[in-house]
Image (cartoon, rainbow, N blue to C red; front, side):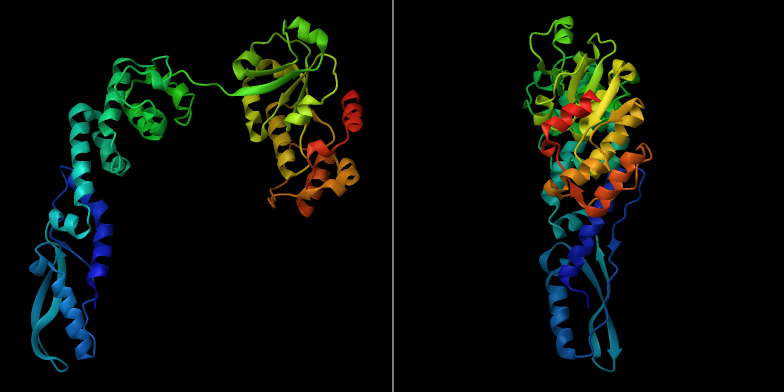
Length: 383
């Protein structure tokens, strides 16, 4: 015999489908909604009395809302002639469903939000059918509508998101980027969207200013530093600034640790970058790297070799130093455990790198760059 608690659990699963039907003006009214239920009585009469009383006591006929029970009279060998046999359980109306699932307040907020969207941004009608759950818990729907309306009138505003001249919280856009991206892709014309950027790059996609990530850079040649007109050898530059550097025949060194970057020896026409792990992809859009001699040196673990392979995939002219089995065996006494990650062998690795990769993977070891002695580094870069 089904219990009132189980009925409420089933009703909670029905709620999203009921809201979807409410949102669709062409959908038929799904109420009364029959709840599939096990209505078989127990063989023990005393247990049936308790179950039937609980079922009746929590039903609409007793408390005025919720589920309804259709009863029928049967002549049973076990129970005799009785009218307490449940035949069907239904939810008669949307209101009954909302009260039964304690969703009434939530739905009232949703109803208000849907009404505002339909009145002010009717283009989002189709989005509502799939995206209504995104706005259920939001208290800022009206503010988000105001932002969308502003961007329709003022596309690609070229200001920081917090600078919009609207009476909304300054963190509103930052906290609701994913939702706004869905809206703006529907509301804005194609020419107002930079489709080369996915919605995850919100500011670039919709024309806001943003804080550009900086790449820690070090000039390894004092003559090159003077040529570039730089007053210091250590800089933190955004990608576009590095792309605009006028460099010819540069020798590029990319490393994975800041300490390592700061201890690199002088290199003729050398410039070094802190790769930041998989953040190394920030360097991929620097055009002059295609014509430069690139040397990569990462940690001796599977991730280090994966980064090397990724870099070489973009810049086939990439060489590596100190990423071979000989270096591993010399410094293995300083190794720590790796992450346990065992990827397949990247096809971009050469024979020596592949041998070292497989050794790291099989032994789950990691040798960080800082453990390699400085004279080894100097010798490798001279080579």
